[in-house]
Image (cartoon, rainbow, N blue to C red; front, side, top):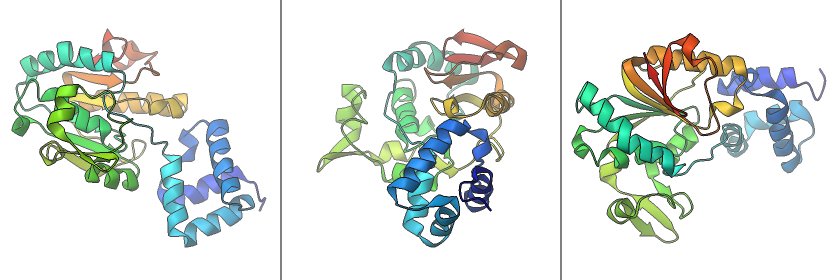
Length: 259
């Protein structure tokens, strides 16, 4: 077997992690993995797979590295302003106070916690529940701890920084009352079942790493996962080219409705 056989690596990684590397752009992902292998001074994919099977720390670092966790609170604040001004009032008027909201590929929790805070301007906290999923159990554990650096929380509105964050050393801990409104689950967008009857799905700046085919599959599954007139909120680096064909209407550049 060739030492640098990427097909072999994809098969082994799937067996170990259930992460399907076929869904990611090959050149980009291969470059990331090769850099990690070089960093750990391992020669070839076969030796790397052996190391993954025996070195728990390397395995966890690899999964963390693979799932590209770049996250921050209130990322692209102007889009959160649209959520606050237009989307939440529309959803509450249409579906009432108990909204079913799913934060897909939630990373370290910045996004679902941002959703709770943003929604708290419209509803009492005890009416808010966010389902948050990610493929990486490490980042879910980080999310449950709820400790963030100053860069992560830079865009949080001052009123929420004062109300819901406590400084701990150089970090900031999010309040338990916000954490209590989020239910975290491990889930793979490409193979696990989706929640149904969602009023809002938020999935931002994740699908850019997927192939066009995988993206299309996920957008179609999101559509089926939404209640009629529910809304999908995507990232500033993404767009759904064939949204009409799937069945979506367009609220604006980053918000799509399930017509």
